[in-house]
Length: 225
Image (cartoon, rainbow, N blue to C red; front, top):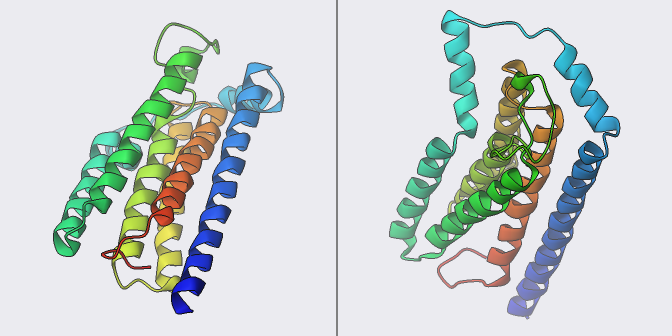
């Protein structure tokens, strides 16, 4: 009876996660449509670009770069993989490493391919065109990476440690703050259009929730239920 109840609960969680993942992907498609058809978000990009950007130097510049690095793949991937290895060693299960590698592969595959396909120029070039033949700025790799990789790390900690519901909520709140910080710093440094960042968040979030749904679909005896 208890096992049956747990199985029903797990199935409900998985179904909700799949719906959320699909909703986030639809949101990404809507953002893409907005910028390609030069609708509201495209015009908002232009208005934000028109705002005078202050040039930071010295300590303030170093601080912004440090905050921007929270969305850097080399940093986030290292933190995620180190955490996965430690959890794998403790629980004698390859699932944390498999989950982490899947997150990094999908991040680089899906987001990376999208950046090549759209080829959007960065705002610093003072021109907004697509299919420029370069690895473009849309969707933002920094924002999608910040949410997906730090979110994956938070999920591993939640699944394999004694974090309760309130603590896990605080953990995911930290991920939200990091993602918002990376987006804000990118706008301040004029390295991304606003829609780049929003599109990156939606796409990264969709991949993260999909991975969580997949992980919950195949329970392991060495993994907390």
